[in-house]
Length: 186
Image (cartoon, rainbow, N blue to C red; front, side):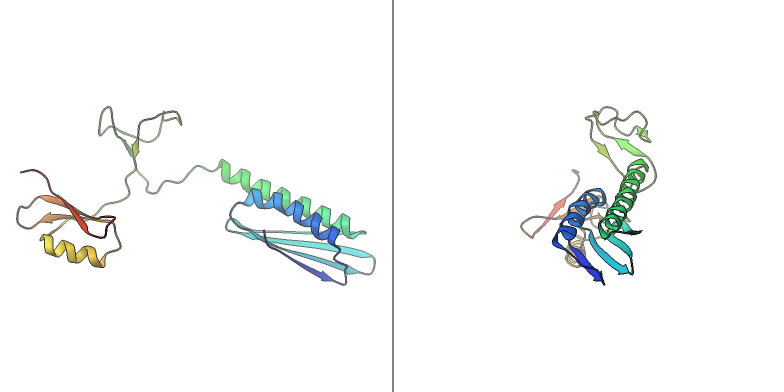
């Protein structure tokens, strides 16, 4: 976790840097990803302030604390930011997982086509699930037109209606760079 230290009329000792880095590693584990932090220590007369801003993909956490000693201010600030990170992680864990598309999930195997909304499905259920990812328009075109469409499209496959036979066909991009064509039997 990259940490930027700023001292405003305050001494940034190696012990303070090491203590902050050790505690911010715990915060990084709660936030996930690759967060970065900015630790600001300042001193005004006999009052020491510590401020920490931690940015990650999950959001930004900020904490500020005042104390008579710089170590006490830093410790209080780190405790606050760690509590925020724990709270955010708990909230994310409580939220239901979002699906790619609202609607039903169809079960494959057993009775094909039986729809359900996830009731009764556990982690030990070993049957594969198919999640609908959207709809695709099926245009009538020749195989040559499908090849031209695949060359300009970033999609890995194309579903089309063969203009000659009026049957659905699938063209896909192969690992060797060529295109594969799947057609139903006559």
